[in-house]
Length: 189
Image 1 (cartoon, rainbow, N blue to C red):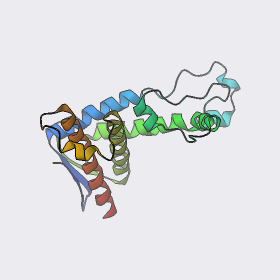
Image 2 (tube, rainbow, N blue to C red):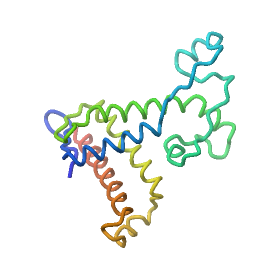
Image 3 (cartoon, rainbow, N blue to C red):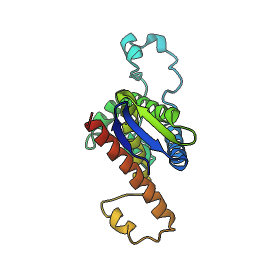
């Protein structure tokens, strides 16, 4: 089973072909879910505040993005203020596009680094940060889809080994293992 470890060259990960393919499939689905970040430019973009345009802020005249209906996207792009919908919408207007871009960039960087048939990867600090973010997003996405709770691991012991839910929860646990070993390897740096 693949795991991260600290070496003299950096943080290293060895994946077999099945592990690399699983990560590729999950990351591809994540990038598709996050989808395109920016919509078409506003018709009056020349009239926008140049600072807003430069830093990628949404046009204040356009309606703010709403909390996503998809529970996974809602988990990945949560409201900043649960008790104040107006403040939440305003914060979302200015943060969601960049948050999506960062999550998408991390997932794409990990996808690009995955060896086609498994093998060894050596990561520098920046790449390790992308991996940490992407693994976290994969766990949040899968955990949300599987409705993971504190009781899930106790239920896992009662599921038949050939259960599709047991397999999915096994992948969830494996992603947690990868994330845990990456954090440990980075801490040794």
